[in-house]
Length: 397
Image (cartoon, rainbow, N blue to C red; front, side, top):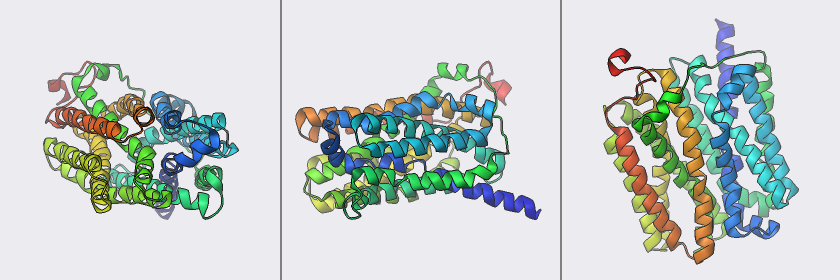
């Protein structure tokens, strides 16, 4: 009994360190975009690739992660993913544009595997504590995402590391993660081999996928370009980074509360609309006023929307399916297509900003995306289920 309890604590610590690595390589980039464009010669539009490439990796690698895990086992696959993430994090410090972009691509590939396999790990080792463990790793993930946004400029300027050293500093988390995960290499977990093709023909599955993708579109635009927007409005890069960090910390209550409320309701349409309203009012406020107090209020609303929308998207995978295997299959589909869609966000906003030298166009685009997210979310939030391929509703019951 004592040995089993110790083993549980070891895997909890491993999950925490894995979660801590799943966002800083991306969120630490946004506040440094200005320094990166100066140091590498990238235009602001092309600089959008710096945060877009990891999302492309998410979309391409997510469907492959379960296949690799079937051959290597889930623990070995996660150790491999941490090694790839660490390599991508470090080679960015070389400082040239090609190595920077290659590093972001590798980092995204490592993160994608963790994103996909973490739910399988939680379900396997904590079947009676799925909500608690999901809340734990999601919170850790968001906290370190916020810390990376807030610390990237101080690491670069005040600690004298430069933008290269600031990006490379997060490799410390990767090293610690590998150290914690190495003792688990002897274990092996083979994911289900269930087919997923039938879900690609389900309108409901596509509504969930679009909701996932569009809320991710908004999140990654936030971390990539909000620091630049705030800096253009007169704030220092340091303060802009910390405000975006604060926005992500503020998202934590929404991340916790919304899935709890969603699980108590047969349909989640009202929650979708509440999340969309927070996003819409926040972006609209940023469009119509540059007042500092109003800007902070808008960031709070956007932060709440970001935290609530990702947890709601993840909750819908379970609430709209009858079996946990199907929830995992829908999650794989939504992360693959959804993150490819999200990858268009930073790049599109970067080109709009470069072409117009104004934030009006990008903010109008974000308002349109919020409306589309709401429409797909309303469909996904209705009280109905995605049936398995070849399965009728009666058979599922």
